[in-house]
Image (cartoon, rainbow, N blue to C red; front, side):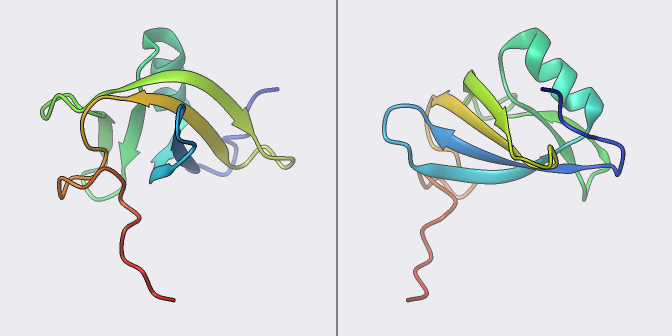
Length: 101
């Protein structure tokens, strides 16, 4: 089932295939989703830069796509990846490391 991009950007939750750890959250538009399907690597849409970006293009910390599912409303993506290097721009393995409770 295809995602519904009719309202614009969709959140993409990225999880690691082996550990099932949530690595990051990014956004996709129809174009970045299509590039992800075509290349087998994650592509996102940067809201701050207003352009597409390929995860790991400059850092080498790439994400090879292993699976993509959508939620029941088709407005959120859950993408399973094989992560090379850290996922977070801070150098942390996951972007979710700031414990609140």
